[in-house]
Image (cartoon, rainbow, N blue to C red; front, side, top):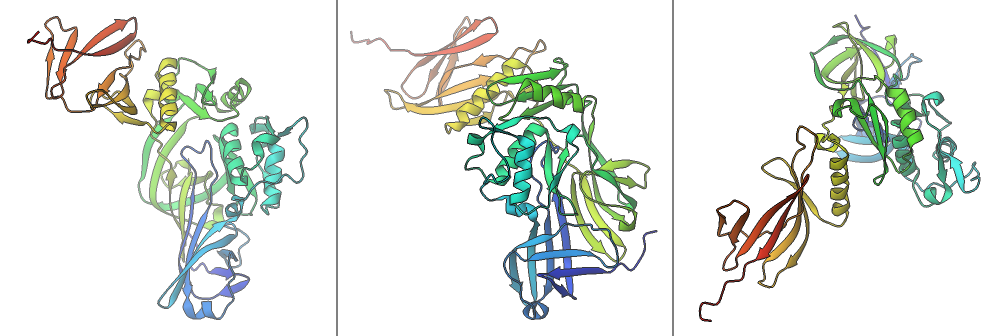
Length: 437
């Protein structure tokens, strides 16, 4: 059984607060944890009377932990906002990651021929943002260089996010206030025992990983089994994509299985180890699990946590072959221009392009449709021009090769033509003959 009667200590701006409550610590990785920057959040409420007796400057440091215990279960936090209501004051705080939202200014690195190692840039970011240092398992990080031009004008956080995608993992602040990179597929450390917990719900599975597809938005680099399906394929989007990076990540993740799960509530004894994201948790059902999202609520019986591993729903259309991936890229390009994407009732994708007016005043848009891939992997592409006015009526010609539509007094003829795997709908306005002629 966990030890009963834990005591906790809260300090704000160096002053100890004796009365506090509503303590909550939140850590969440993005998606699978294959990219991004994790910022831990700390919420706590103190009495207005005690708050009034202490000076609490902006962004003051906040520490919270168990009395007489060397084990830290949270990093140092910094006040982001405060609100007073009645006799209480509530603070919302973030860990040191909040200081990465500043422009990166190279200090301790030199750009050889205009380039520097990505690891050196991370080290410089850590120094600039006040971290003692950064750490990771270096053997699990691919090596690549970044240009001086690329980093110019970017924030530290923006650079960390970009580098994390290329390294395939995410950055977080450890409980010891160190900037830490967690490679996807790595277990951070042995964790705690959850001796009492609600039912653990198993969710979707990703893997075993057989293939990595890395793209920079224009080119794709594939490593592994090119016949792997969506469940065995990890897709990575990064501006630094290369065949070398794709092969490195594939070598690191080959055979890795990601299991999503959820546990609404568990009680852990911090005397038995750490509880943080990507640390192991031994459950009473005999299973050891790894969480990448966690909310901690300190209690007299230990730390109550709500935790799990993110259940990421992927777009399966994106994995049906090279042609469909190229179509998805064209959709993305169109969206950059303010166009829209919608689902159709046959569950294909339709990309709606720019509007224009025809001679009769009707509004016409480019529409690009994609049916789901057939059994042989073929994705049919339809580049039809379709008016978005409602048709009063439509007629199918006798040989079923064309459709005649009547939007108001105007008559259009749509003809479907097939050339190999490509289907095109051609539209032409049908001019009525003058019966008075």
